[in-house]
Length: 175
Image 1 (cartoon, rainbow, N blue to C red):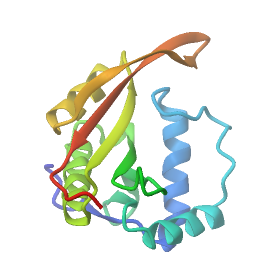
Image 2 (image 1 turned 180 degrees about the horizontal axis):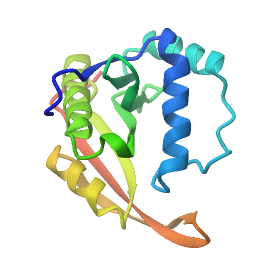
Image 3 (image 1 turned 90 degrees about the horizontal axis):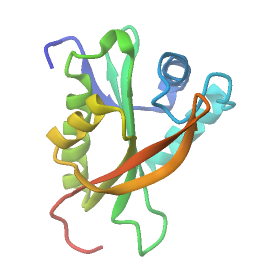
Image 4 (image 1 turned 120 degrees about the horizontal axis):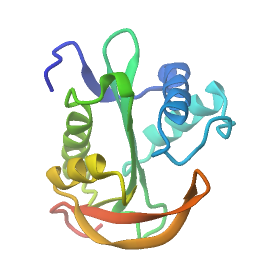
């Protein structure tokens, strides 16, 4: 990442308003996120409560890219809640269009991977729309491997879209 003024750090409840605003911007800016504009119903108070809950779970985290003024991107790992899947976490990432190409996505994934190693999270998994070549390249460069295709799993702009399932495994003892 070229920007020395951008810091990757865990989100805290006081980030809730800015994180919600970032997610709303991403909903409008891109069709690659899950929610369409107007679908997000959570409030800043609910985001704050979620961040507090995530902080108490050892296998979940929300990281933000913060330039001191606004949040430029985020990555969230939502860890499994049962004995059989608590070693794994579902990953969601988003970066503002204006900050795209600056290495923020790479930095977020690098810090997420380091966190997973420290916390013993063995498996990070995500899905990406098959036609999002830029994101697929980012994930593969970060060590994620293709596991399969979910055919017609989404409807975007009135068309069926395939998703690719990718995962990254970390060395970790069975928990």
